[in-house]
Length: 126
Image (tube, rainbow, N blue to C red):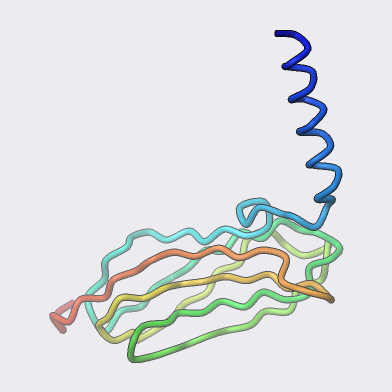
């Protein structure tokens, strides 16, 4: 049994070493926080985006996309010196099912992506 456990541990270490530092979990780099998932139109949605400071971080792109509309905003990041918490508002969102995404870019590629779902109802009442 000990031999099997040791072999499994060595295999895990070998796989982690082979993959290298390029694989990063989205939650390790960026996270979207919302106060709710359901809003009435015209919705003002305030997002809090947590970005783990890192020397490789160059920009943060935040998108709100539904079947009928798309909005985005981009923030320049100053690597490891950048603050961790960013806030952003998307105003007057019409009714629809939205996918919110936050993407952190480095010089060469996307470093992390986080997504959240959001529903804006068409009642028109606030």
